[in-house]
Image (tube, rainbow, N blue to C red; front, top):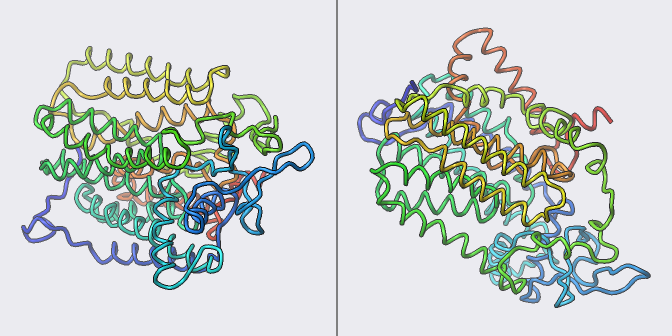
Length: 500
């Protein structure tokens, strides 16, 4: 049974939580460290970052999403325009087959928002992405990375204060979130993973408040839907979190009447993403759903073998993705505690036979999802769609049929469902480890769920000297992976570089 901290135990009955000094200090140190790193950024970092910033620059300068026009150089097509200039070249581009223009391969919503801010900066100070690159980039990083990260860490601290009994465990959980997770590692680059993780943290906190504390007003449920929708809009696979939350609402009579508010609010960010896709490309789907757009003559992605990711059998890739040189667990061994938390028994009184049938059906559907991801002849877009459909069915099967299951146990079960399926999907259905990156960035939005899951075993361990030493060892190894490249996350993991 999870130990909960009632609001009136920490705030004199006012229902408000005041963060303790240790939490304020830890968050302030993290915020200061991230702020200092942002202030050292002079411009876009790496191909991934330049691709998004090229779209921002095109919108600010030309009011278009196109970032280049194709010109022939021998047998190749090369872009002429923004992405042909020094410091702006990138491989993350696609060629629109009808318009014959180059576009960024990245989703369009985030660059659109950054471009809007950049236009305000141009109107106020005369800054432009081309002439005042450092100032414009830093402003965007502070707005879209640093501020959401700070707010998500505050929510993590509040989550720990409410739902973790031991002060030592609360501090340990916050330290892991601040220094041993990969979320702060990407604060120096524009990316979709960090905003998705921050939105997931907000959704997790709101869901816990709803299930544990009964805060189920329509406005709170709508806010939950909004953050779930935002996470899914910037990170497609984070739609699983929204599916989990919706299935939870529908499965419990008390919250069923609020499901419409959840859906309507969650649809807003998704609609904005689809709208910007349509404005940019003339279609609703993002560019990365079309393999053919990548394979123009001279494209980096048209090569048959690209770097380390194309070498070796699929089993070796899966091994390295989970516990090898790019491994989720080898780079962040602190997640072993999350796995232990996910494995804790539930407190529901449902029939053991019914629970066994549900687990078997859910496992079968998840197997279908993994099979869809791993089957080579299936086009990538179809694999994604099939996997998401199967995941939705699996999530529905995993929802309890009664209302008495412990709420925090339900959160851990949601974490297990999303984690196992996503790790299997990426281990068996991809071949590039997320590209040149210090860690498994595709899974970054899961960190809030992982942090919530590790709380129970963390409480047990930090109460014992040997357990505290073990936690310190796991924390140190994870913190090394997350902070080995503080100024640029676009490097290979330290384990891979050590073994090379």
